[in-house]
Length: 157
Image (cartoon, rainbow, N blue to C red; front, side, top):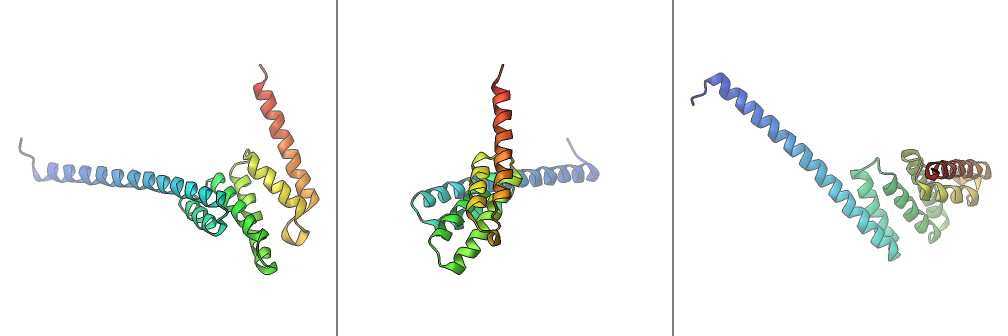
């Protein structure tokens, strides 16, 4: 079957469109795989107390998937561990980063219990100039209680 110039252009456009779609979705899948791989690497570094490497891996995972509450949570945990073993000026900066990552993790997923618990603990222990406060910790405790009530209600027949 012979195609005229108009039909040939339409087929070429369709081919290019399909190719672009394939590349777009392949890139997204690759980014997800890379972020997952970086996350697993970060957890391995964290488990081995290599918090600098954990921060690097989690930051890269967050760059690839900025909407992941889990990735922000683990980045916050890693910053917190670095803060525990740092001098006063570094600890100040790292504590702020810890709080920011925990808050973002909770903002992205209000049901992330680990992020809520660690954020509550941060608020309890940190002085006000680092963003801590008993009132903030109490607000998180109330959220956790409400979350627990919702889970209990969901489990009831």
